[in-house]
Image (cartoon, rainbow, N blue to C red; front, side, top):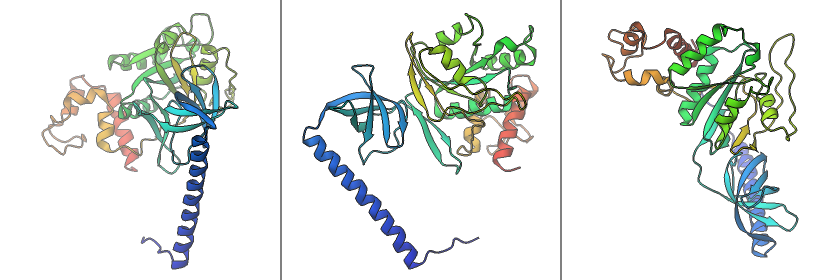
Length: 337
C-alpha cells in the first residue's frame, strides 16, 4: 500500500509547528545562557542523574549526597537515570544540567511503537529477577539474556521467593543448573529470613546494577529490604491470577548502604527483541558461539540443513535441546510464524 502524500497546506502546517517548537527551544536556550552568564548559577560541577521526569531531573552532586531538582538546557535530549552530567547550582538548591558526560553503556528497550527507548546508563550488571511465583518461563529468561548480551552488560540471574521452593528444588533446580552450566551467575534470594539476602548483597556491593523482570516477581520487595530507609510502594500479588501488579513508574537510582548503586526500572512483562536481527539473537545464545561459522553452508539457518554445526552439537549433548527450542521459538515469533 503506497504512502498517502501530504497536501501543500498540510506540509506548511507541519513545517510551521516544527519551526515554532524550534523557536521556543532556542528562546529557552537563550534565557538559560543569559541566566548562566549573569552568574545566577554556580560553577560547573559533576553529578549523577538519580531520576528523571521529562525535562526535570533529580541530580546528586558528587560532593554531597543531596538531591537537587534540575532542569535541562534546551539543547540537551535523552538523559536517563544513571547518566553522569555536568550541572550548575542555583541559590535555592535547584540547578541546570548543562552537559552529559560520556556513557560506558546504555540499557534500551523497545517502546509500544517498536522504537528503542533508553532506560538507564552506566551499568555494571543487569539483574534478571524471576521467582517461584509467578512461575518462571525459560523462554522469557532467555529473552532477557539475549537482550542483555546485545547490550554488552553482564547479566545475573536472581531467583526470588526461594522460601516457596520444595526441598529438592523441583523443576527450578534443573533450570538453574542449566544456566550455571553456561557460565551465568545465579543468586537465590528471599525477603523472608535474616540470611535470605546475603548472596544478593555480595553481588550488588561495589557495582551499579539494574533490576529487570516480570511484574510480581518481587523486585520492589527486594529493594525495600536492601534499602530499608527508602519508602517504596509494593504491589500485591493477585491471588486470582498469580500475576504481578506493576507499581514502579520511573527508573530511579538508589545508593546501597554497603556500597554500590541499584537502579529500579519500570516492570517489563516481556522484553521485546524486535530491534534485534536473527544474527544478534543467535549471538545472544552464548553456547552457540563456538560453533557459529562452522556449518557446511555459509547461509545455514540452523533448521535441519545438512552439516549444521549447531545440530551436531545438540546431538553430542554439547548444546541443550531445550535452549535450542527456545531459540527457534524466538526466531519464529520474530518472523511472525
